[in-house]
Image (tube, rainbow, N blue to C red; front, side, top):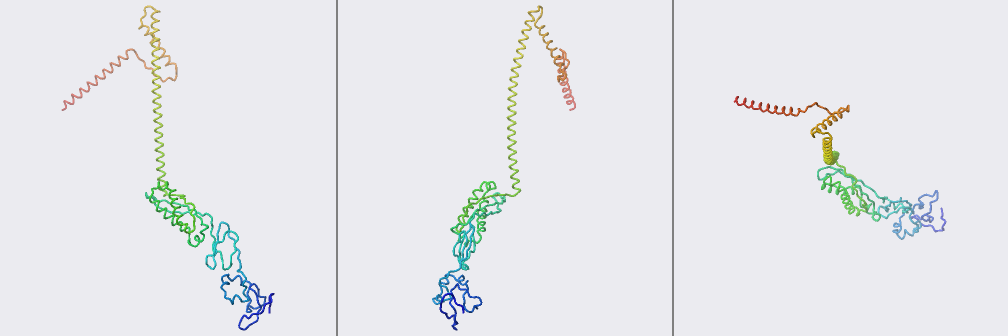
Length: 364
């Protein structure tokens, strides 16, 4: 027989009243002792629950092999930062494990899940149609996180939070975009995002989730529609460019005409002053020449001046080797000859017309 350090009387463990020594719950069965002797292993205290010990009968509580002062075995767990653990005891919710060092009653208690409290983002992509029958692919980004005071609801009331969020985003976007044209849809991206956030906030808070932000990050129409929109925009820009260019040309022409008119006016003023100066000079020359030389008339003086200017003109024309002026021989009677030729031409044309009319009358 093995005895413990305590001096205790032997108890009967069966009807045969086989003598056994008294051991507490932490006593280890000595090596070689058969299990039938009734020794409790050291793990016995770890397998008993406090509630189970409390529910023992009075006779069981007085049993010498059960330590009434023993506690369940502790198991140490570490929960990472920005996470909260969910503790269950025999399948029932027991409590939460905060980040850091945590002690639970194993094997009755266990951490069944760890929920991250970080901000998470879900990108929801969907295809829908606008009011003007244009199919667009919209992307809505939803930023959410569990509410620390509602971890129970976040874990037990909702199986798939992302699927739930997608469903409400689909509902809001596909009920809003069909009421808007394509251009209005691009202009109303912020309004759509606000509608999505308000709808999600109202629903997801009941399930322990907080919606921080909802953003319409992309709205992509069909490639052919984008090409048509680009062509429309390009045509509009080209039309504006042509209008601006025509307006610039108009301004340039108006300014050029104004400059030419001003130039001609000033040129006329200059020619008028030049001729006045020439006439004054000729008058003075004729008067001086007539007074100086006796027997000369003003006509003789004018003929002499004109002949002098004629010779000056011939000198200027023949002075340059690259002159573009063509000089035609002429005589004073050329004017009369031109008049006679024109008169004869008119008379011949009139006679021909009268002869043609007479011939037509005779043929009838």
